[in-house]
Image (cartoon, rainbow, N blue to C red):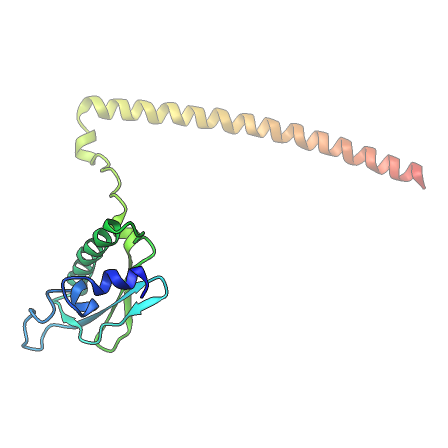
Length: 173
């Protein structure tokens, strides 16, 4: 048995899928909520979920898959295994794939929050922002002119080289 198989099998429950989704069967049984299946992939091992779990929406199923991916990742990291290549595939009741949840996406830190327009737009920062934009606009125009001049020089040099090659070619015949 491979180490990643041991991790799944060594979880809280004997069934690896139940170990990933301990809330299985706790959803309402009135038949109104959709059933989702969660197939776990680790390396070349695929653990298919043959029971499924009911959730009010795909978003809820996704959030549960993310929580479970974090728990499984922690278990793998404890035994010094890399969970970044593992994933969970969320399927609908007909077992059509709805989305893939790579553990690497769940483990990636969220990007820093960009300041909102409200944060930026007090009078002083608005003026600084406008000034910075104006400076960048002037810089952009200057760079465009410089690139245009360099392009003109390159075309002149290229024409001169082409003319010299034509003369040499004629002279060599």
